[in-house]
Amino acid sequence: MCIGIPMQVIEARGESAVCVYRGQQTLVDMMLVGEQAPGTWLLVFLDAAREVIGAEKAGQIADALEAMRLAMQGETDINHLFADLVDREPELPEFLRT
Image 1 (tube, rainbow, N blue to C red):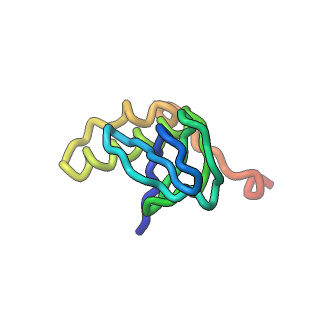
Image 2 (spheres, rainbow, N blue to C red):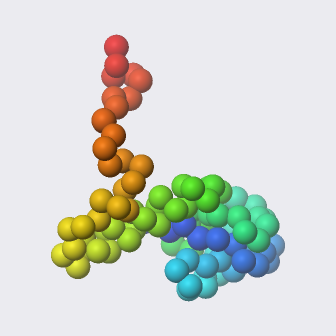
């Protein structure tokens, strides 16, 4: 399984960029998304940027990854990491509503 990591560009280098996630810098292949300005958030798989994302979505993904890390350590108090989902009724996709 491949997990996407939200990373922020800190230095553009043409076909690659130096990006950071949780304080760790990584050289990321930018061939699929093109050169991006510093500050841009990306969804990165196996050191290759696959999608440009917004800061809010990057935060939600980072929270989900943190919840997964905590759950693997046996923690059960992770609802705060899913603030956008807690106390919300599930919704069917549009094509299933009819």
